[in-house]
Amino acid sequence: MKTKIAFAAALLAATAAFAPQAFAQQSVLRIGLQEDPDMLDPHRARTFVGRIVFKGLCDKLLDIDPELKLVPRLATEWSFSGDGLTLTMKLRAGAKFHDGAPINAAAVKANVDRARTHPESLRRSEVASVAEVTAVDDLTVAFKLRNRDATLLSQLADRAGMLLSPASLDGDVATRPVCSGPYRFVERVQNDRIVLERFADHWEAQNYAFDRIVYRAIPDTTVRLANLRSGELDMIERLAATDIKSAQGDRNLRVVSTPGIGYQGAMLNHNHGDASNNPFGKDKRVRQALSLALDRDVINQVVFEGTHPPTNQPFPSASPYFVKEIEVPKRDVAKARALLREAGVTTPLKLDMMVTNNPVDAQLGQVIQAMAAEAGFDLQLRSMEFATQLRESQQGRFQISRVGWSGRIDPDGNIHQFVTVGGGQNDGRYANPEVDRLLNEARTVYDFAERKKLYDQAIRIITDEVALLYLYNQPWYFALRTNVSGFTVSPDGMIRLAGIRKQ
Image (cartoon, rainbow, N blue to C red; front, side, top):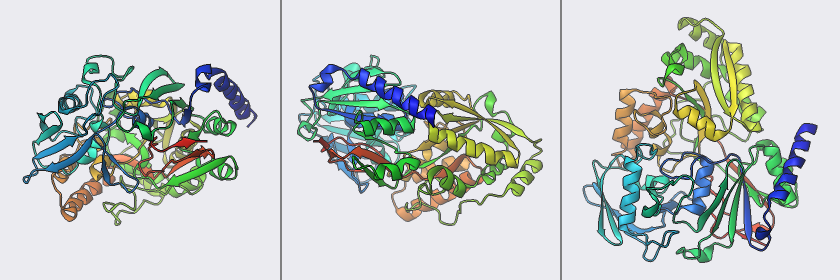
């Protein structure tokens, strides 16, 4: 405890020393993030905190409201043709990029073409249905589809629909993005801060109160909360469960929360490089044994003080696509050991597990490690910065990677790209032709009942094969200084800056 307090005090002093004098003359909102984002290129990025930064930096065609309904942004109207194979969008007149270039149909075409063809794009599988993008006129764009796509509008309400200035696309987008949001890029100091400044020519500039936004990456939850209490931060995302009661009792702070629409768990390496050449990657019985070794109820109570409901599938229980018949498995160490024997595994089976370098993930990893040991697994924990963890995962240098997903309003967004062949975030290269068939067909179906049947079948397969290890649903907890007002908490966990004020 003394070490944590000393570390917190040292970081507070460093934070105070960092603050440029220029900031004191401006209206600044300082936001504490749990990790440092990866690259600031919406077509290649994948971190949750990166999406929070993009909310200020990069506008997009559509967004969602707190009720999870689609709302206009750079697209003001949209409609599908009668056969469902053409999506036509009308664009907002007068909107500009940060370099002053107009946002028009040609710019949308350039961005979506890059999202669907760039060799490093993680959006390719999200917009795979798009065969061609056409600029009908300056403010009308048409998406010609290979097949009907019930997911496309949802995809365009996230990173696939974010717009960068076409003039910047041949440059180093990741380190100096020229985007379209209410704030433009100023600087980034890796693992420390990202600074944005107000873009006066934004079409909605009057709704944004601050001259600058400073995002601070502070993985240690104790230090992040200490910075908030001292006034060095104005708000923090993902308040640790162990700090909720303390923050609620602080008269200078306000805590707000909402259930999430995603899941937390682990990516598993099935067929990606040498790290997958073991019984864990090749035999579902070994993965089933690991799942049975874990007590998700205990994880919820010990790590999260009862705030994170256990799960075993990609949709939260409130989702209409949740499969009620698939129950969260109860811990069964004897059955886990029997499955390992049946698979011919000599215990203890040594496995590598990556966790993020923050206290919550460290504790979660240790709890999983201890439970797994009783069933015959020897989990070796590797702690690292989150962006590094994602790079290791993308390159197949892992067996288990402790990750999660913040969730999307369309069910496809929580499942397709993680478990289909060629999926943009299928780092473990799980492959099952029937799952591919079911999920690809589900993208083309608009009727809820028919679509749910397809997802039900797919989920039964991926839970049986333990394609991913689903553990719990994460609610979003934010803590703010009481002088901050106008923040609306949303089930997607994003921080939308419009309307936020500071007294």
